[in-house]
Image (cartoon, rainbow, N blue to C red; front, side, top):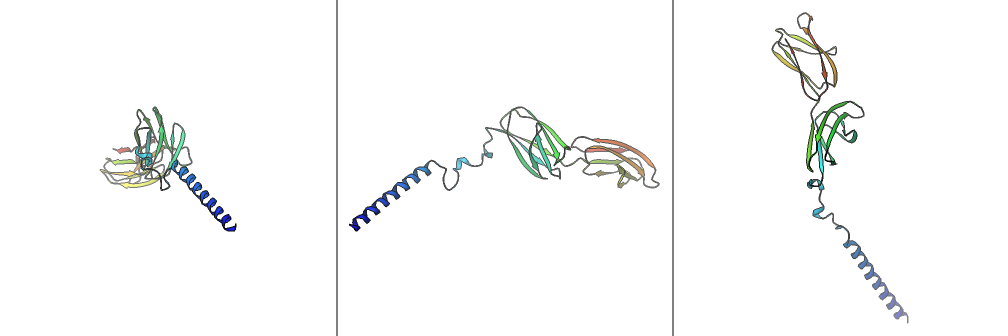
Length: 197
């Protein structure tokens, strides 16, 4: 009797195992491979036929917050890039602001007309090229701060100038007599020029 009972229990146990294995096989058949996604489910970055994207790359040398149509998208470090995904077919206003501030350092309007990739490269901060055609060596100041001496027929750059108004003046190197001044309004992410004659 005991042997028969034991055999019956073993038989029920084996049937239970087979049923459990069958349920697992059936459940796993409807899932992705346990070894990772199928090859056709690879990174959807390769499939750009179903969406428009704007690829933003920053060379600004400071951390920037990126906005589209007034809505924050992401933060970019210098020489970093990211994508604004699922962009609607329309004109979109892009802005780059210094992180945590309302200071706009670059902006762009992108006319999205097709489901494809668009690019926006944010250049480094504006520079001012100072050209000395005055005839003598000069000292250059910006906003009251000394920048450099510049020889006659030479040009030099004031680098990474912030947006806004900047007062420039040139003094003769020999006697500090002021010979020229100007106010530049830096309002676009481009290079500016001041020629002293």
